[in-house]
Amino acid sequence: MKETRLGEFEEIILLLVGILGDQAYVLKIAEEFEGQTGKSVSIGATHSTLDRLCKKGFLTSELGEPTAIRGGRRKRIYTISASGERALIASKDLRTSLWNQFPAFSKLSLHL
Image 1 (cartoon, rainbow, N blue to C red):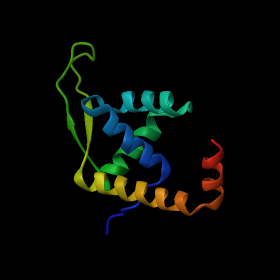
Image 2 (cartoon, helix red, strand yellow):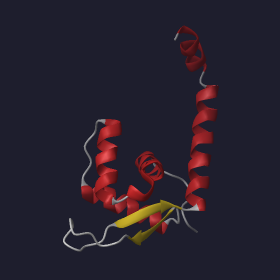
Image 3 (spheres, rainbow, N blue to C red):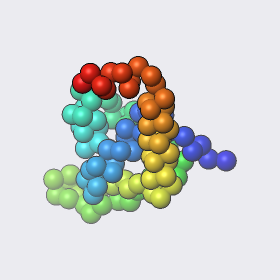
Image 4 (cartoon, rainbow, N blue to C red):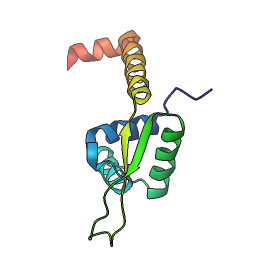
């Protein structure tokens, strides 16, 4: 049976794939991660997470067109699958439910 839950890093990577759309390739995803979180991430960690998300069925990938800038090489572009969308929704719903049950959060939000 495939794993259907997302780790925090996996969730962020999956969200970034959705944000980047047709620009969701490994280098751009890593750059966006650093820009959004302020944390550095290696290309290797990004690559292995993308591979893991593909194996879980949350992402699909295909090779883009070759470009002169890349010396004729093609980029692998990632796309969220229907099961990836469901996993993101389930993750968001769980987090929202937990935040809504956290008494200190409701007190904090009143003071903000």
